[in-house]
Length: 298
Image 1: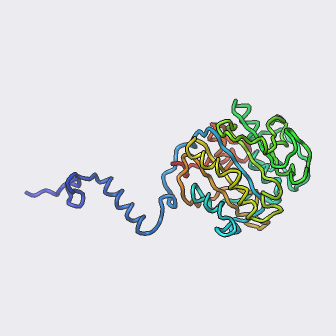
Image 2 (image 1 turned 180 degrees about the horizontal axis):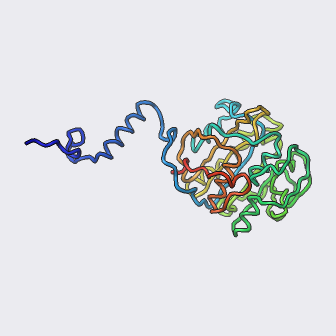
Image 3 (image 1 turned 90 degrees about the vertical axis):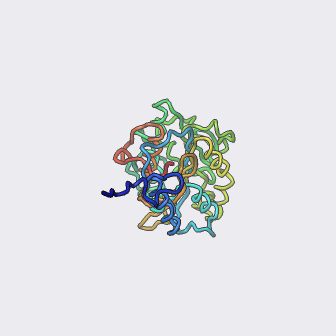
């Protein structure tokens, strides 16, 4: 009496050394992906169980541009940077105008702010205070700010409305630094650093190309270093160009990032929650209701 041939001995799985069914299916999946021109990152891949514990995270925020404005011709460096890491095609600001978005990313709340009026002062939970209270480190760097701990509203091309950490009493003045203090030895960076270009280089008052050149000259060397030094660069915008969608560019580049295009909807609260998770911290305010971004980690 004949028997059905077991799967392991099936002729399509057996060429010299036997392939396992799992390997066969893996090859079949790879062939389908190759044939369709898709990459693994465009699929709902199995998510990581946790955000990596990065040694350094640097976040830089630009101004008032919709993702549709950042094309390969208008912003070649933004385009190439996104191709090196995780590009989020459905990233959104929280509101308009600028200031409440900066507060949202730093504290998980707009703090009831609806204007760009200055100054603002708060004592509640925020990322900088949260990191310091947990024995971790934070520093914020603002271009054109005249001195460490400066609390003025305007100085040339510096404006405090784009410097969220100065608004919180739990962040010491010594952690509020001019961009000229940003280290060239990246190993000396804090666990988390926020960077704010001035009103020209952030694209608020100047062309997209100006910000594109600034990002390349100031942070490309960190982006490349981060890939091999357990570190991460986050590049995002506060809001779009005052459209109702508030659809913005966001990219993660660095160690443990699986390059590709990611289509889940995220906003500033998701980004904050992810930074907190990288330091084993709980979510604060609106970030407390969200899970960190997990599917981009290799």
